[in-house]
Length: 164
Image (cartoon, rainbow, N blue to C red; front, side, top):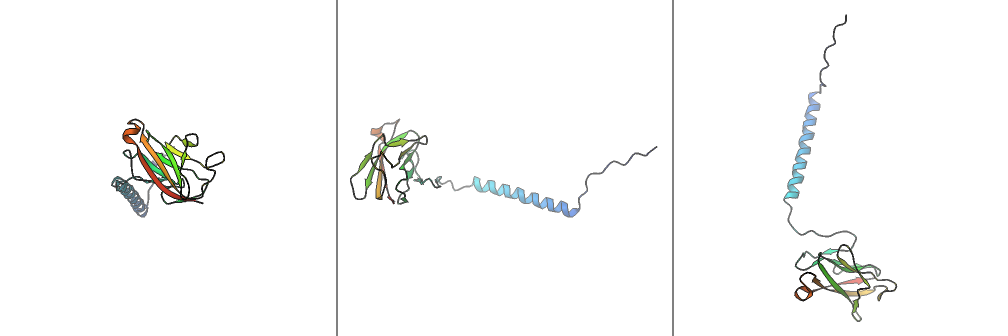
């Protein structure tokens, strides 16, 4: 007859390994707590828009109706880039382009596009009143809240930029 083998004991780790594991876990927990506290105590400032799409956050919200200007104030764009304004939901408007050395052009409804993000955009190109932008321009957006009505909420937002 064979004698029963002793029950296997759990894995035994040296004290050094146990200390390293404890330190790593402590650092990981401290990093998670620090990340939470940092984001929870944020500065409470306005969200800014960034990226290559040429948006500039104006810092304004519902009362002004404007979320971003396309292109940002004082920027330089290529002559074929889109121009316009990003509005808060429920707002609409119309665009007028003022060249630095010419006559103002109201961009007609059939030339502008209102996309799903509530941006009113004009894209220069063939078969448009302006094929390519070149020089200094100011864009004037007359905007209003569709619910409260144009008479009560109409305002004008204007900004200038250069195109090459």
